[in-house]
Image: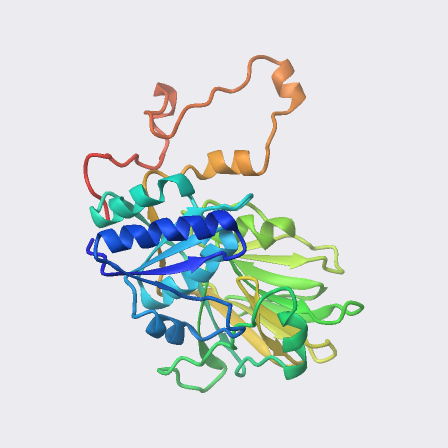
Length: 357
């Protein structure tokens, strides 16, 4: 693809990220490609996606240098502008970035020469009964140690307010949307609706709706299932609920999940991909559903999600299983599967000799 301008999202607190950013800028200079740092916190202020992209000159490729948190910030920008995002891996336990930092120049060459695979990832969006706002007194507390606060999401300009569907917010989430308690000594009480039907009223520390991509993040820590990022669905998981039913529920992509703060509940915070974006009062609600737009993530080869799962979660084999014989065989994803597994629907392995998009 033709790359005219690159937008850089850099974890400035890590020396290796700063060094890698220098390599990206050098590559851009060599190929007469514009390069702009975006989503930078030095000025102590965060801007809307549109403002950040306008300042960056509307790049056609976002490159993130850091861990999964840095990738999420870049994905927010890429999704809103429907452009590619390339995540360079500098993290420790994440699942989103897969390009090694040592091959960043080769990765940029591959993008320019169209020797890539574009992986499509499901995103979430939301509606709400009201505009999301953060009380002024909270911003100072959240700013300390976490960087400047993102602004509340804007209402979509084409949205019509009316009926029971509230207002549509101009927001995308790659991992999850979370409704959580504000007071340490008081849980939030929430009615949870799936596809318009009441599932149950929960009293919990938090309630979250995750994508398959986000199933290995907060949802997993709360006891939710691990789901292939190639799957489609909304994963609802309660966090520390005061009730017997504490399981996750996986809904279809066309089954919205609504969370309504109940009358006697305390206020609840709305976080989108780990960033606080608003506070709801009793009677307010949000509806979470699959976004019509998808994230376009650059991959240089087949995604080894399950190999990474074994590695990042430090999975070990059961002693009893090993006592019964030799360990289960492993084979690289770049080689053909064993004959007795050829009937399975394994992801196709791209041919490195041809370009993919």
